[in-house]
Length: 284
Image (cartoon, rainbow, N blue to C red; front, side, top):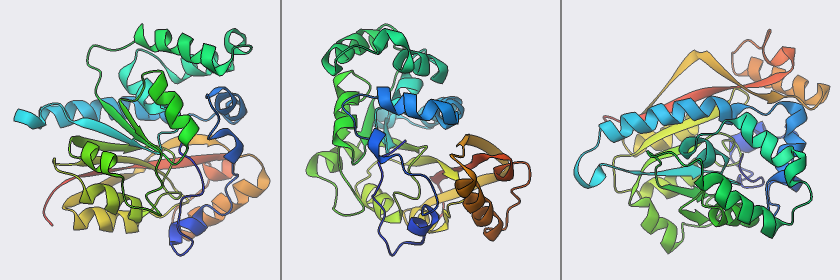
């Protein structure tokens, strides 16, 4: 879901995104209507699968905490318009959000009118167990929207591939106990994770959904250097979206095969798939 153009060219994950269609024009609009309308035909669905996973992880993270660590903040990396925060903290489905932003009821509203509507829309659906969420993304308009409507408690439009965290983000990291990401791995690399984990003060958990076309080993190494053990169930896959055309499909099939995986009936059938990588405190 995150903004594009963040990876350093010398990082191997940057090349992994070379054959993937870019949707740069929808990631930093003043509001998310173009985002939902553009992605709807491709059945973009990974936030739907992440919703239940993130809620279960948050419950486990809270159960593992005590004292001042009892209600840790979530940092959503590549947060864009706050979609993961919307699904984590509100009684809503991804289908509800598609209907809301791609439907006729919001078509003719100005961004200001939509923000006013969305403040009420989300407030009326806020869950009693809602958690504090900090968002990080290089898309300034998108993060500003998510902050304005109450999806994010703090928002930082920063590119951690290029510059260190601001003083505000470094301060916010002191309360973060869980990092979530659904759409940014490959656009952000180990440089971003190193920057965030260097500022962490609580025991940190990470849940990352990663395309099978993108290597995660370098990020896992950085997490290990910060005391986190990363695991994944190689057989448990989560669909992300349909390919935009044969070129994107062929590129994905080639990359999946090069990684030693089988694309038969998965990428070869026309859709990106992801794995969930879970990182938890363990032995260095």
